[in-house]
Amino acid sequence: MIDAMDVFRAFEPHRGKAIVTSSGTSGRRWQEVSKAPSRDVSFGSTMGQTTSAAFGLALGLPDEKVVLFDSEGALLMNLGVLASIAGKKPKNFVHFLLDNEVYATTGGQPVPNSTGIDYAGVAKAVGYASAHHFDDLEEFATSVESIMKEEGPVFISIKILPEIQNMPVGLRTRTPTRSRPETIADLREELGITG
Image (cartoon, rainbow, N blue to C red; front, top):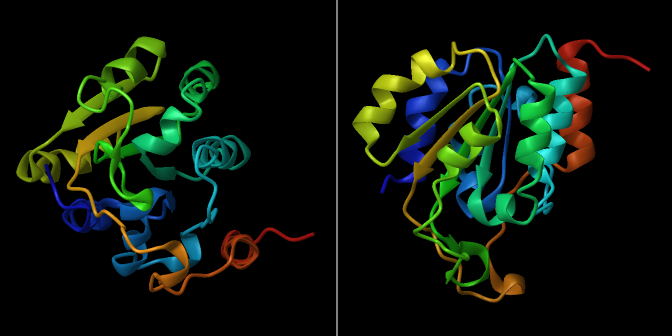
């Protein structure tokens, strides 16, 4: 398994001008690595819906590369979206899945069939243009540049170390983030979208 921060550090130099969004406990760490926050979109606490929202961005902005760092717990809540993505074939969509095998935000309970699902295999079977799986940082780091050049939709599952949250939600230290309206306003300004 790989530390999520190492995944983000390996990815960031190959981001280019991609719009990036992330979900899950580990996904929150992306903002610590991102060098283009005006191209980062936060959907906040939208577990189960982030995949659909990022897919919508890819469809609505076909000239922009859209990258999602998804979590397996969230994806399992809306697994049918994979077929919708594959059916629409957004060439600009790169879908990373950070798979830590648990619901880290709620204490580390294992997700259903946590060690038995081949997410990359599922994505390929429903029609993604390509699918990859990594559990070794060096292999991922040497592959990410070519993956980012592939025509989408591209799916990449990565086994990561869980960052389990056990404190009650109200007692947790909150990482400052921009609100959903702020991130959308920043992205609109970055892309020159008015009205």
